Length: 266
Image 1 (spheres, rainbow, N blue to C red):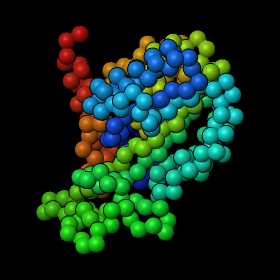
Image 2 (spheres, rainbow, N blue to C red; image 1 turned 90 degrees about the horizontal axis):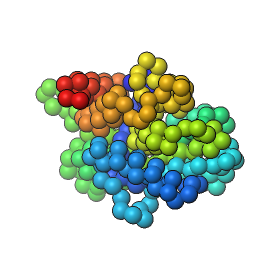
Image 3 (cartoon, rainbow, N blue to C red; image 1 turned 60 degrees about the vertical axis):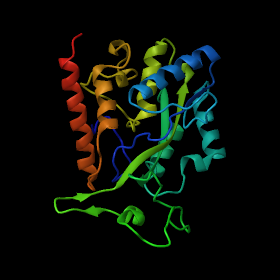
């Protein structure tokens, strides 16, 4: 998990919980539609509800001839889209600096929020603002947002979860020449749906994430390992207050999915 996943400091692995909508820019319609459809199919397989045609994309893929210029322009003109002002909502200043000058074929920036696991209400707030959804009368521990851990006789249960709210992906078109469209779409699906380490190298894992690290031996699309990773991530009940334990829950779910796939007839 640690080789591939990169949650924000001290947080669990975030996932999409609301309606998922992906958009692609910088390509002709036919090529863009292929990528949107492929990513959406993977999202649907995970149980996500897809946005209707014309929905406002929260996962956006931009293909650019000058990726550095496109990245710098976006950050300069849409700065609040990158640093939204909520604690632990991104990987921080150094990560943003690296994003601006990355020489990778694909670079990405992700934002998350912490929400109440039962209500889905954001429970972090911008500096100087009252917490979102602050009640006039406190009726239950969940009214306390981040302080609302529930203590039971057996364990401490964290009623806060981490949600993805935005993923911006920039593809350098000069560096993807010769890459199969389906391979690229599946690679983008992994990034759009999970907090993947910007310096990802899946190492010994059979994963589409090796597409640019080892293009000559990369798989033709999502592998059993990739699908197990995503299903483990989206199927895990990440309710422990400890971030390491929450990631272990994802790993356990992933292992379960790998075993299930091995039992299924080919």
